[in-house]
Image (cartoon, rainbow, N blue to C red; front, side, top):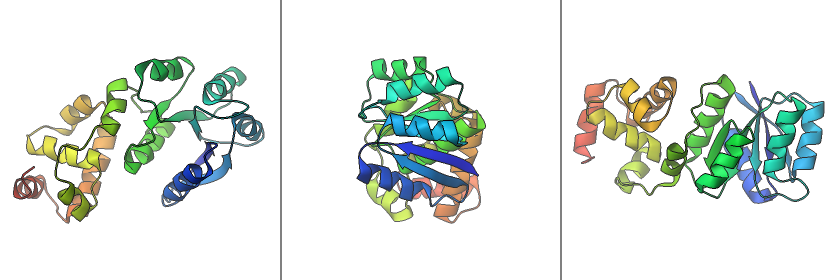
Length: 208
């Protein structure tokens, strides 16, 4: 079980994230906090695996949360939730010890996979990957909507169609091979297929 704490002063957003993550059987949400002070107080008294924190919060912002967690030797890993896709902000978060960085308009599955990667110590934090999270989808929205696919999954389908291996896709998207294999499994389940050949045929069928 991955124990998670969420810090964001926007209650609706925080509750939305909580509802999304509660759908995952291996996630446990331990608390929602409106500022960094409340979060740090909780972390000092409870065992938390992963913290999701906004940057802009009253009393103690996300930057100070990062600094405090690392200076205090708290074991929780930290993923920053941000509305800013600026490299300067990204680098500052990394310099302060962020283990992950997710844009608030990224696909939900991006957050779920990042939490698991960070918890397992295999997350590759990279700015180009951050930008990719919010890039407008270049493929058919009807295809995505019909099969409930995320932007990332459609992107991986296209790369598989091009003949790339999981290792090559992982390298291009700055993801771990394990994450690519997890995406592949989800894609097969959503499309109701069992092989790479069927996947390629489906991609041609939908003009991807």
